[in-house]
Amino acid sequence: MTDQNSNGEVVAVGVGSAGSRIVSLLSKESLLVDRFVYVSCDGNDFPPTRPGETVLIDCPVYQKLSPSIVRGLAMKQSNEIRRLVVGSRIVFVVAGLGGATGTGLAPYVAQIAQECGAITIGIAVMPFEYEKKMKFYAGLALRQLRAAAKGVIVVDNDVLLKASPEDSLTDVYGSANREAAKALGSLLCRSSDSAVPVGLNKVLGTVLQDGYSLLGMSSSSSTDKAEEALAGAVITLSRMAEAREANHAVVILTGDSSVSASEVGVVVKRLGSMIDNQDVDVEYGVNYSGSSQLQVSLLASGFRSTKYDDYDPLAKLFRGNTLDEEMDFSLTEGLERLEPCEF
Image (cartoon, rainbow, N blue to C red; front, side):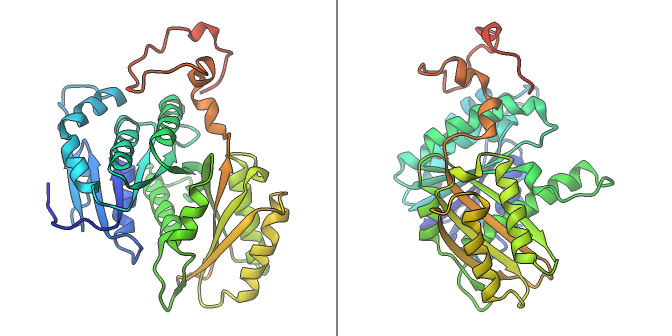
């Protein structure tokens, strides 16, 4: 584990494979983030050259890992995790949910950061639709992350997917991680000659609303690219929840120097009608990245229910009661009372 002497005000913590790789990509950009931390059970998840600190959870190679086992093992190194977040003003906990490491550690790391007094924001990347075996634990971990953190941004891997049928699985995951980092980076960028940022306070003002925050995105190079890209971003949100429930939103336009003020105006004016809620409060920013395509990243908040509620049927079965927060409960007890559902 590397050591740095000072705690920055804003910390990004990558948890597990996907979280570490997304945070590593973010560390290469000029962002409103002071320090980068990586927590995982596998040292291969850490980038070979990285600005930041690491916590490697000691897991026996012969043991098949589950979220509860990973969390239990991490408790032995809770002081190391605590040391890396104590004194921070804001902590972003980035993780892919569904696998053992991200699912087991993300709520735990968020809980530690929150106990240390930081405004803790969970960033949860949900499984691809075809990863059906991951859905239950992903839904459970998302609910736990929402309870542990001050706010949660949810990103769906299917929204991020920009791969061709010929791409390998490694290429697919790599592409999704890059798209996630690009969208998150646009929200957290610093002011410069190539960016008019929305600002960290406005991003937090959106995320710290009741319910969940969802991050969608879409690109276009057509004549009406601003409206088309916005429409695509709204569609990605509607695949996760009822878009009209959004009460706060941040839109970021990313493109080359031809992105105009009028296109920004189109996006801000049209968002309310596209989600069928004219009362939505909209903030906006622009990144001039040099790409000929215009990408619209849309962060919206206020969602009390999402499609991920169905990922965790036990939450409905035991609503009003307390489930074992260590994920050690039996999955068989009471399942016969569930309505059939497809994972």
